Length: 220
Image (cartoon, rainbow, N blue to C red; front, side):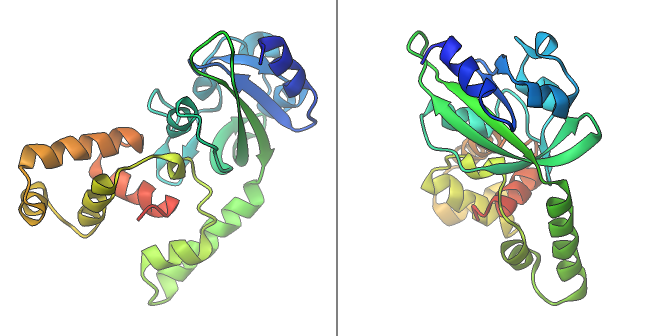
């Protein structure tokens, strides 16, 4: 699909929409996006989308070079819709994003069309109810997340291997590098290498952040 076709596609929707190329740079930005983000197309074009929306989930920032959505796009995998806290004309608010992958005949990586719909009230209510359940019942936090949370999070697109999921679950149970290495009969270096891959795929800076992000995404 040519860039001209992408621009027509983005312009044809009444929802806020924009498209990015394989480098994550904005190549199309419609009028509804101008209104939602208070940013004219002339200022959005050519900028990294993460720099504009500064997306975050319940565990912290997610927009970066290690974006899990971009990882999925590069592998041509379908992407489920997800919620992000974004910069908008009225301040930070929760929005739901749907991403369509469109092949770009002139480049290795496809275009990604993002369609954005504000869901701030629903998301904030969801978080309040979940936190209430955790604070006022005997339901474990991970079960409360499963019961209440929509799990519409970008981290759900991360492609973790079976071994990485196994190590992530052990980390979630309080496992340390030495204990995990002993349990799996591998070296500590191997465990640490897997942990580094997990952190990159989940766009996390610490093990705790990766665990929380995986729990919210329903990966573990």
